Length: 378
Image 1: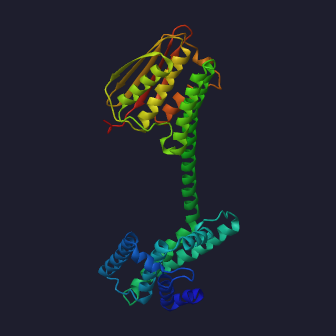
Image 2: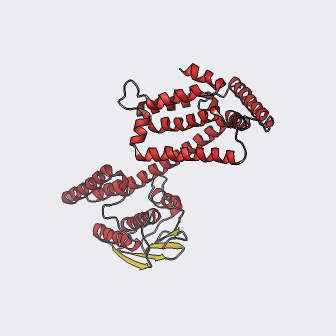
């Protein structure tokens, strides 16, 4: 059947149309319904096919309006086969769709296989040259005689097909590289978010357990608290680093940080807020970084009071976390301590912000967070 369909191209393409009709209307041996029946039963797929058919009909009407009235049976057969191809692609069963994708991926003409040898390139160049020359030849022979429209169609298809055969491998390879790079970037960001969450949650709890080793009840409380948070995180991966009662505004989120620090560490936190804005991914990262800075100050500064000043402006959100504790030298922080590098600096860089740490031994510490806002934010 396939050989006859190919040979029928020389006699008007009726065999191609018949082959496509059989493919659409005859169900496979292991299936109850045909491809056409599935498309007709799916309203969305039927709308797509009808829209494409309408577009094909509009092209034909435009060609006739331009005076190309020589479209005969071959042109109609190939255009109808194109509509049938769309029906097959949209209505094929999962098994047949997988087989079609494997066939397309195995076709060296479109560059889906990694063949980069000189023989593959030479064959592709020869096929491309033949198609381009044939297309130019057909287009140059157009005159005012019967069949001119069909020559226009054949010549244009051959000309465009020649360029596709030659350049499609590079286009496909470029698109795949861009897609792969994007997936790797998303995975890297997910791994960074996971590392930040593990540091902020698990390691901080382990430090608290170590400090409260002499109080079994406090150790049990911290362990159960961490267990609940990890279970919530594992069973709700979309809520990475978030809680069920996610605040809706920046002021609510910062107030939650204030309550957490005071309840967990017994350290007073003086929060001053100027302005407010809705929460989004960027401001969530800002709040998480501010929380980490406040936790570090509560644990290591040695002072009993912290000050947090936050200001929301039309174009930027600024937050300052200050303490008057013992301070430290940022340049002497060990490389294995990731509280500043991962949980603050990298987290803010990922959302387009920046962090400035100002501290010295005996002078306390000030951490400045700056997050630009989009023009459309309110």
